Each structure stands twice: as C-alpha cells, then as structure tokens.
Length: 159
Image 1 (spheres, rainbow, N blue to C red):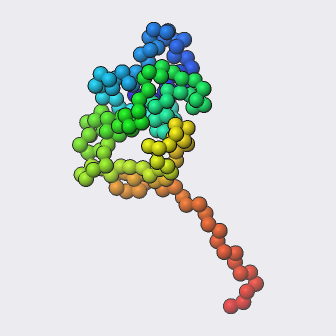
Image 2: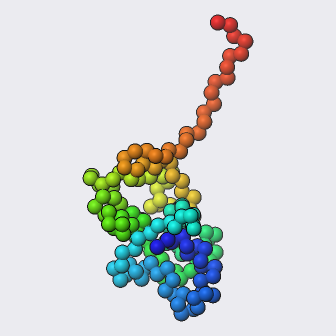
C-alpha cells in the first residue's frame, strides 16, 4: 500500500465509493488488527517519492494542512508505519532475512535524517530532510555541506 495516496484520494473517495464502502478505504489499522502484513511504499512516480509524506498520512489521516481528516479510525502508530515501510516491505519481497532491519548480516541500507522522527510532530515529520543515504554500506547520497566563505585573495600583494 502507498499511504500517500490517501492525501490525494481523500478529496474524492467518499463521492466515488459512497458512505458505506468508504469506511474500508485505506484500512491500515483493520489490516493490522487482523494480522495482515502491511507493506508500505511510495508509488513513485504516481505520488511523491517522499516517504515522510506517507508516514504523515498513515499516522494522521489528515491532509497536509491538517484541515481535513479521512476515516480516522484507521490511523496507525508511527512505529507500525515504520515497520510497514521497512521490515514488512522486506517480507513482501521475500528478503526479510537480508534487509529491513539494522542487524549484523543484513544489508546496511539506511538514511540519516535532520531530526528524530520519533519525537517530531506530524507537521515536522512532513518537513524531514535526508542528510545521507547508505545502500549496502556505501554512501550513495550526502547532502552537500553549506558553502563556507573562502578568504578573499590578497590582490596586489607581492611575493
């Protein structure tokens, strides 16, 4: 499932599905309550590749402005959403013994963020930035450090 779809689909879902069927749209909590493995992704390029937008949708079920809520009984916790994006997604591709966890013997695929998302507010979560991406132990992306001012050349100086 791609939780970010909720953010765009909530505008029309009730009209198209009707008041009875819409209760079962994006039923993440119901799935978990019935022991269904819930694997999340981004569905890029249909939706934004930003997983923090999906985390926000999963835990709030609100539009990004926080002014509209869609079937709030299906909210899940941040830990459940993180599990769905990591370990459950590895399970969905039959690679749960190779990836999805930070443990010895697993692929070292991870990101370094600009904040602790476990203590961030939902709105802060939306603005999370990736500082570094590591795939199989190799840095494949690193945010460029802010340029420092270089000293001005000593124009007119003699050697």
